[in-house]
Length: 341
Image (cartoon, rainbow, N blue to C red; front, side, top):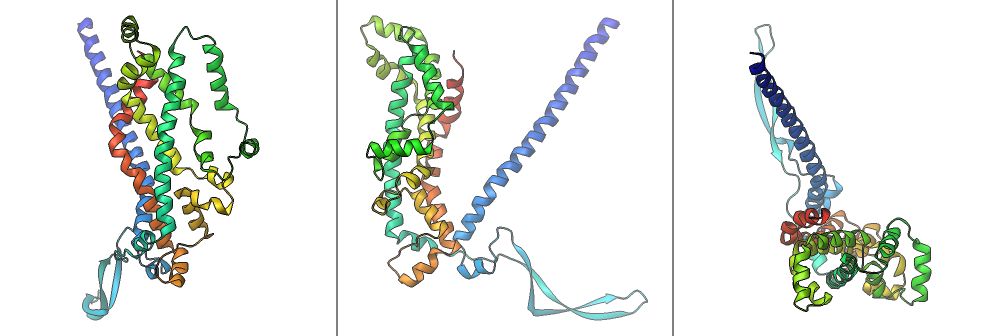
């Protein structure tokens, strides 16, 4: 009887643990949902502001939640009991849910008619594409040789690369270096300095190490060299990792503006400013939004929140459109690159 009681007790403990785990899972789900709502709500608020009329913004009527408004033009007569058996008639007003802001597209029309904004969008798209391709090439060419055990000085090279992750020169030394290299106020300063991330290179290297050595050995027995092995075997098998790292590089370049702000300060270099720097200047009120409409109206719209919100939304949309195409590679790329085997 004692022996039969032990499995029953063990089963009860297991059920209790599973129950506690389920409660913990629900707590995590609630927390994650709250975090998602917290992150999405500001974006939705900006989107609502971009479709709002300037007059509604000035009255602070931009909101995503409908309000209960009182219509004083429609009085309603009601009767209530006073408690002593008598009744009285009183006047109230109809109440209804109201969305205070209608859909207005004037802000987006002004942004599409702004030649400087559209030119900056096109330049940033080209810059992001070129930067991502070159960054992936540099990352692969740096990670692939480090997978060979016979590479002389591999340990020293790895230590030096990791050293740069924790100790960097800083802004002033970089400014002096770029000045001596004649890279200031030049589009190359937005591409060359950030072509490789040591952290992403390590992920790429771990992914390469996870590919079976038998594939490389078989190719080498057939006479294939290191470059052929890379192009014919490693790169086709590394699509998830390449997509993941490419997404990280693209997002970082699209959202970057501090390098252009510090290293492209000359007025003649304004044509090479990425969209995020132009958006920063618009939000700071340093320059207006040019339109082919009334110049006086354009100067006023430049400082309105609706135009600023429209600029923010338009700057977010292109990079957001990339996520659905690469999302399926993101989790598998990071996971497979994190563990060898």
